[in-house]
Image 1 (cartoon, rainbow, N blue to C red):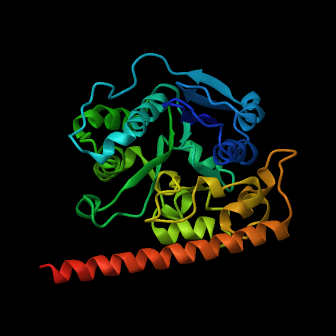
Image 2 (cartoon, rainbow, N blue to C red):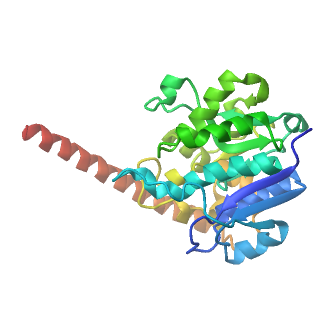
Image 3 (cartoon, rainbow, N blue to C red):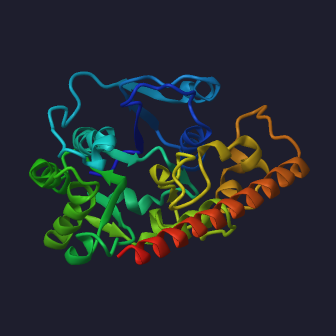
Length: 317
């Protein structure tokens, strides 16, 4: 047996209140252009909409998800910040189940494919890749983490069956216990039924502030052995979240992709839809200069507020 060249994506587990985003379009377009798959299957509850969706939709096999989603009856601990990511937890279970039944390649929708996956990877039973370990989390004790944002599997694989069988018991409402730490543990216990790629293959630039900056604010290129980048979108998507980056989904525009001198823009530029409005390079550079000045002033103001808060705290002890 071998892994089929069918790519699976999961999207729209929540109601779609905004048009299909450029990042998601470029994910699917990069898969199509750089891997020439036999098919791309999009599994969804709520179908996307918008001009970019209309442009990519004819290239997809649409797979509506029916029935209750995994974990639909799970009750998160009161005050848990993980409750907001219930849709992501459901996706964790869905992706393993889909590959176990059908086989193929799974990738998160915040993926950008850079180079074709080599034939040799499709000859394995199961494929995952290492990711940077969060030293503040359980992974530091467990010794490693395999990121589930990219999976390759034969239908009916031993590893997939073992992982799925243990997922529910290991699910504790956290981001990683069932989804990245557990497969790492299983890979150590059963190395003969899974092939593990180095971090560079799928997650070369990690989820840290440095990694996100190297994706969206700096420029570098990669050898053909770097097949894709994971973009860690939940960490920077919202304009109000600035602890990792001041880049946000509103800045990922056709103008940015067309003119920015960054890693992401470099690899996505040729994938822009026909007729995309890109404006001029000069206009973009002026806009970016204004953004940098605003970011700097906000960073300084934030640092001052934190300093004042620390001083006030020390004075009131």
